[in-house]
Length: 145
Image (tube, rainbow, N blue to C red):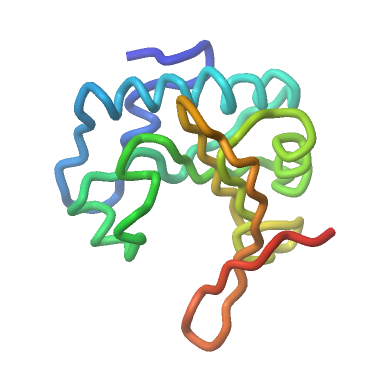
């Protein structure tokens, strides 16, 4: 099922884990909104493909990947993204699009290793964070340039 020109429901629910990962009606609606309001506009501005590495997660899938029990992935409101220049994609979303939460996930060779972005139907916070490893734990801090 196509959500937007460049993003499908299959792409936003794919998992490499051996678990059923099927969203309900509310989660499908949230995924469509995320694709329409963030993913597709980002793809159009960037002019290059964006890869969704994680979108919707069932409770079982979320547990298997070590996700937070309050993760917006469970509601279909979040996606983890990569492209050929993650820093450019991060800055584009931060500077031009509405979102609930945007996380610079760890540091890779060209900026963040991946980008977490979420969008809610109402009450988007525009919160920008940076994830860093402290020992074996991930800590989230306000993003600083």
